[in-house]
Amino acid sequence: MPSVIEVTDLRKSYGGRAVVDGVSFAVEEGEIFGILGPNGAGKTTTVECVEGLRVPDGGRVRVTGYDPVADHEKVARVLGAQLQQSELQAKFTVREALELYAAFYPRSADWRPLAERLGLTDKLGTRFGKLSGGQQQRLFIALALVGDPRVVVLDELTTGLDPRARRDTWQLIEDVRASGVTVLLVTHFMEEAQRLCDRIAVIDKGRIAALDTPAGLIRRSAGATVISFTPSAPLDERDLAALPALASVAYKDGRITLSGTDETVDAVITLLARHHITARQLRVVDATLDDAFLDLTDDNNRTPEEAA
Ligand SMILES: Nc1ncnc2c1ncn2[C@@H]1O[C@H](COP(=O)(O)OP(=O)(O)OP(=O)(O)O)[C@@H](O)[C@H]1O
Image (cartoon, rainbow, N blue to C red; front, side, top):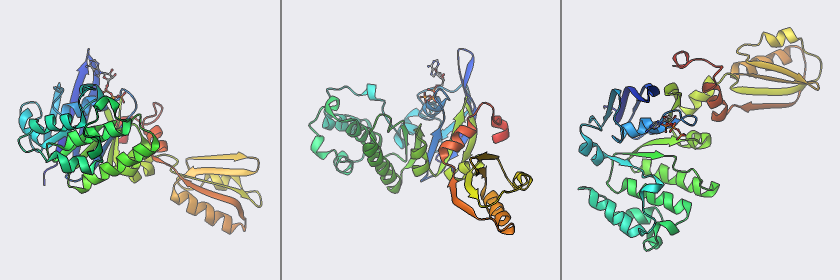
């Protein structure tokens, strides 16, 4: 089956500066695909090219086989885009906004069950400006879904929400996917990306620094696993330095902290057993997507070409 979204060698410059510099990825039907990257990395520019809101300087974008610029109407029928806050007037009520947006689409979903599903039924008469942050985001999701799209683009949806509202929104995004809609999600939040996304493209300085599952990205991070312990007897530093896949080793107050991979952990356990040394207060901690992100977007680290 062809991909729902295909982006190939996308390029966009402003004032001679490339802000999207050869980005390629494909989003498959039913996926939650994340775009993650530091401020100014080119995330919004990329998704706005997918939405047909910006015209690429180079490369190819297809949404269900259509060009978002040349076939804008066809793309608008299959793609639900989340509005930016500033695009909805504060005096609109929830009902007016839903009715207005439903009228844009020939094949709109009945907005009433949608409002019910998103917990907006008792807010229909409330003006947009009087809704809480979480309620506003729920309305944005409803407006993005009102055209009954196959794919929905959500950009920084949970920014500014408190932790509970953010978690509620995550559940909604999972529900959206469960209903058969493909989701392209732009986010700053690692926890959000780790929890929701099937695959993530990490964008840095206009290029894809890595594209993988959350677990795959974490595995790529240099010190994916950290093991620390206090040995019952001294260990030979040369034995430690020779451990497989070792990224770092540190000694402090009799405690040893190693970072590496599962292979390093297995080898250190074997090493300890061989020397009949007990590891006191042994702790093994997996790296998070946060660690992988910092690793992948670190200037001193590998180049995007190396990472790809
Ligand atoms: N219309 C424009 N004119 C000039 N420069 C722009 C324009 N749009 C974006 N840029 C610049 O392009 C770069 C990438 O912006 P973009 O909004 O795509 O990044 P982003 O990854 O979404 O960032 P953020 O996480 O901060 O929203 C930024 O340096 C931005 O200032």
